[in-house]
Length: 124
Image (cartoon, rainbow, N blue to C red):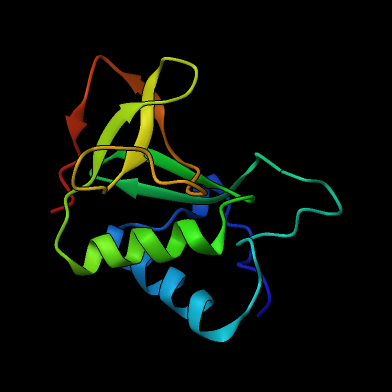
């Protein structure tokens, strides 16, 4: 395993725990800089992983970096909640688990449906 295998939307992961397990496996088994193959490009903002959390869809892009995953996993281990925050294009669809609700550099994790403001994601 060098990269995470692409997941189709219809075969989405069904919980945050499945996502955490997949990311930990990738982190421990590879030294890749990104979770997916950029195919020679500097970035590849296409969905690689789809996650269904309480009937709401989320996606993580191919160009998400090891540093972004490391910080996300560290925050998860600290018990931090998931939140929807403002993305760079002024839309409320970016996912973070930063304790200050800031974006995590290198983590390209998004809600499929834009929200109306900052919102906690119920993962139970």
